[in-house]
Image (tube, rainbow, N blue to C red; front, side, top):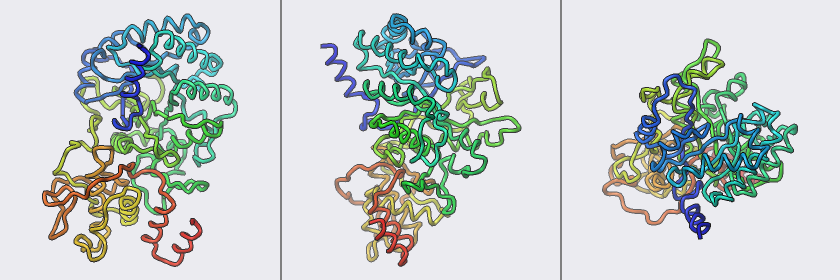
Amino acid sequence: MIEVWLGAILLFCGLFSSTIGAFVGINIGTDVSKLPSDTDIIGILKAHQITHVRLFDSNAHMLSALSNTGIEVMIGVTNEEVLGIGESPSAAATWINKNVAAYLPGTNITAIAVGSEVITSIPNAAPVLVPAMNYLYKALVATNLNYLVKVSTPQSMGIIPRPFPPSTATFNTTWNSTIFQILQFLRNTNSFYMLNAYPYYEYVKSNGIFPIEYALFQPLSSVKQIVDPNTLFRYNSMFDALVDATYNSIAALNFSKIPIVVTETGWPWFGGANEPFATIENAETFNDNLIRRVSNDSGPPSQPANPINTYIYELFNEDKRPGPVSERNWGVLFTNSTSVYPLSLSNRDGLSANSSTVFCIAKPGADENSLKSGLNWACGPGKANCKAIQQGQPCYLPDTWQNHASYAYNDYYKKMFSSGGTCDFDGTAMTTTVDPSYGSCRFTGSSNASSSGLFTPAFGPVGPLSRSSRNYIYFHQIGSLSAVILALILG
């Protein structure tokens, strides 16, 4: 009976529930000189309406403090513990009883991260990594908790030597045996791949090959578009490309349907003299745009139906960490609970899902090519009702990209906000409380606007366009014989 009951809970509260949507959680590191008390940390989490946290260990005081908060918790087996657990089923059973069973159901533990980047940080422990995962999972089965708690292990991008183009990315063959066993475990236990993906590091390593806007989720000009030459997928962010590189590496080992959760990402807000990109402006831009990106509920171009649940690194600055200056400056909050920079972790666009007085319009002065792309996406895959901006219709004039994009953006946004749609469109959109309706042209959500009836949900404005949608864009943007030829070639 308990298996049926727990299974029902899992189905209702599953980590990847499409009714809840993708989430943005936060890592809580403890290499801090003056770490707030557990009670204060819980107060901070509640104040910011943070619903998912990742702990790097299984601290008893913190797990007790999280009890009855409803916050979903990922706990960690430290790298030091992996060796012992990987060599002893009884040690794994003891660990589960002490750190998981003792706290459920009060503390909402949903996942165990076995080690942290074990393959690249302590390669000598790689042979016992998968045994450790198996022993822990069997201990969960023995206590009827495998329905509630997933087991996985975070990996860095370091095990994928060449992540671009994503379509040709593969794991380092040195580790193929271990990685194959990890993927086999994840598939057999219906778990997910834990990825630590840092566009900051990848950008610094690229030595100017990629534009900074690409790393920060900012709009790219027409001459800076990043396209995979094999799939023709356009990548609006390095974050998406890193996730796709991992999906393709998984596929190269003949595995599929293993979702990816980004267990760490972020941007340092301060660095040393040789770390010019670690700035408060870049950190704020990255994390703000990351939250908007994840809230689209869409996956990367190769996996548009798989939302990218993500944990930001990190809640507090860990001033005791060794290494470069930037290592100690990834936090979004100071330990006195004040913000390093303005950031909302609690909602999407800082608006109520039921708002009827907020509109989404094109930003004045937005790049025309970007507006064209956004308009075509909204009217195509986004399924906005664009009839009113057709010639002869009430919102056709003025016949400008700014006006037409505003209408399409708003129609998409008003219909899709509650299920994850955002007012972003590659940075060309903004929200306003001023009703943009004029004359007989009524924007969706206006007090005089009529309902357009049922709407089929679609994913947000990130990811690949269908072949027919690409053709639509080519015709609309280029309007030339070359576009006709290109469309014929694409079929």
